[in-house]
Image (tube, rainbow, N blue to C red; front, side):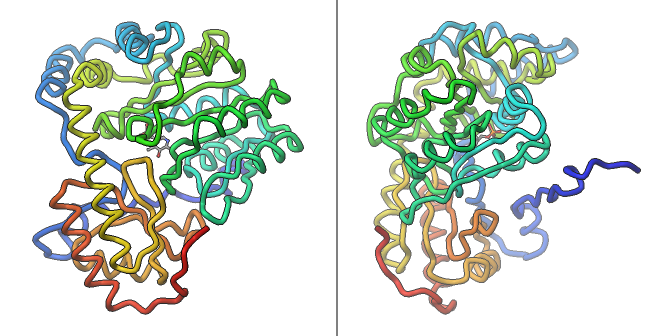
Amino acid sequence: MYVPQHVRNLKPYVPGKSSNELFRESGLNRIVKLASNESPLAPSANIIAAMQAACANVHIYPDASGTELAELLGTHWQVESSWIGLGNGSNEIIDLLIRTFSNPGDRVMASDCSFIAYQVCTLAADREYVSVPIANNLQIDLTLLAKRAIELQPKLLFLPNPNNPTGGYLPKSEVIAFLEAMRGLPDCLIVLDEAYNEFVRAESPLSAKELLLNYSNLCICRTFSKVYGLAGLRLGALIARPELLQFYHRVRNPFNVNSVAQAAAGAAIADREYLSRVQEMIWQGIDLLNRELPHLGLKVYPSQANFVLFDTLRDAQLVFNQLLKKGLILRPLQPYGLKTHLRMTVGTHSENEFAIEVLAKVLATVETIKPARDFA
Ligand SMILES: *Cc1c(COP(=O)(O)O)cnc(C)c1O
C-alpha cells in the first residue's frame, strides 16, 4: 500500500497508563492518576442536567456553527460571537490552524518543552517543525523565539501560556514585547494557547479583545478540558478576528463539535460557583505541593497551571515505575527531553496527600543521579 513518507515517519501516540489498566494488572486497592491535567472534580449537577437534556436530541445533527454557544462564549469572554470558533478539543483547533494557514513544507515554530501536539500536528500535515531551546530555568525564551522566527519566517508560531509541561507563565509585559517584535512577520499566525488561563494567579490575564484588536496576526485558543472538567467531551474554542476565522470555518468539518458538548459548555460557563470551586481546590493543591515536595528533596518549578513539574534528580522512568507499583500514575517527560523530571496534576486534597506519601516512600529507594542545586 502506498503511504506517504511523512506519514511513515510519524511515531504512534503512546497513551499514558489508564487507572483501569493498572487496577487490573496490579490488584492494588487504590489507584490515583494525576497524569493528564484533568480536573479532579466531575461536572456539577447543572452541567450534567444540560448534557442529559441534550442527549434526548442526539438524533438531530449538532448546530454546525455552534451559534448559541458562540453567543454565550462571546459574552463570557467579551468579544463578538463572530469572533468565536469551536473545535473538537483545542487539539483539533491546533491541527486545523496548521492546515488552514500553511502549505505542506512550510515551517511551524514553538519553544522546546511546550505542548507536544504542536509538533505532532505539524509533522502529520507534512510541515517542518522547528523549536528553539528553552532557557535553563525552563521558561520559554521569547527573545530567542522572536529572533529565530524573524530568520526562519514560519507560517505559524505556537505560544502556550501558561506552558505545559512546565507550568511556567510569561507575564503580560513579556508577551506584549514579543508580539511587538513579531509585527515584522505579518504572514505568521501566532497562536496563543491559553488552556490554563483560569488557573493564573500571578496577575489578571490579558484581555482577548484588546490583544486581537492590536495584533492582526494573532489568535487565542481556550479549552473546556481543564478547569471546566469536560476533557471527555472534547471541546475547544478559538478566538480570532472574523477575517481569519472565515478560513478556519472553510477547512473544518461542519459537525466537528457534538451537541452534548455544546450544551455542556454553555452550562459550564454559566456555573460560576463550579468554576470557583475548581480554582480553589487547584490553588490549595498547588500551595500544598509547593510546600511539601521540596521537603522530599524535589526541585519544584513555579506553576500557574493545575499541575507542577519537578526534577526528581533521579532517573524519572525508574521513579515512575516504582510509583506505579504503589498505585500512583504521574507523567514522565522523556518525549520533551526531560529525563529526570515528572509532571503531577493537582488532584483532590486526599489524592495530593496520597501522592506525597507514595513519593516519599519511592524516592527513598531510588538513587539520585544529579546533585541537588537550585535552578536559576
Ligand atoms: C491540555 C492542553 C490543551 C487542551 O487540549 P484539548 O484538546 O482541548 O483537550 C491545549 N493546549 C495545552 C497547552 C494543553 O496542555
